[in-house]
Length: 278
Image (cartoon, rainbow, N blue to C red):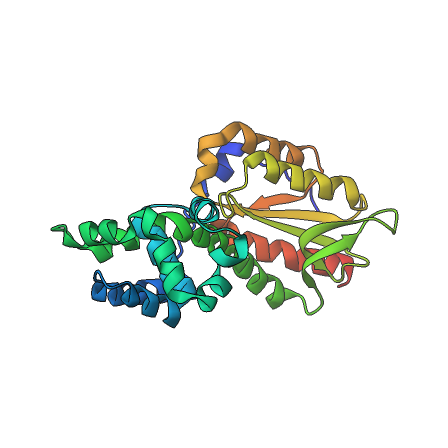
């Protein structure tokens, strides 16, 4: 295994955008449920029916109308209801009409009617609000997981034995640390792979550096560490990315890869498999 000295600029140039859909199954459920709110009128029983048919989706639509986060909405509810239990689904089920009437101080009906009477499409507005809230979190989660799946497809094409998203046993044989892939096993890893789609979960670059540093401190010195990362948002914090490259230049990890370097990644895995007799 020859020594590799990577350059920050070369890796930054190979970074690509991690694109994914912002919706999940629940977001689709909410978007589909928006049409039902066109039935809303001054009769409180209409809202009772909507909440009864799908409490979670209807509650999310209400929050979108009010432009409140989940935490903000729950804070408002706690101020309106005498106990947290009454503010939730069980409270609604025990007294549906009373629940809806308790929401009246939120001016829900007038805000809904005003939003729906505007010239632009009210459904589009609420969809965008959902996208900006829940959607941004879903995109981040999907970016991270899809990059892991991309890496796993390559790993599984080279190795039969590996463990994904596990805690490997460290150099003292007792303590453990998390890693995305341990080859051939978490108990006695010869190769560790950590996948970091920057911005995937909203974590800071310093958290990424910290995660990798903990792996370096925990693993045996003869265990090979590979880092697979991507996301053009790294370019906005180049100084933090340089810390990652410093780890590589100092020999704490073998190489840093991006999606554009996937061929090199597979070639190195094959080389390591042969060298370590895996």
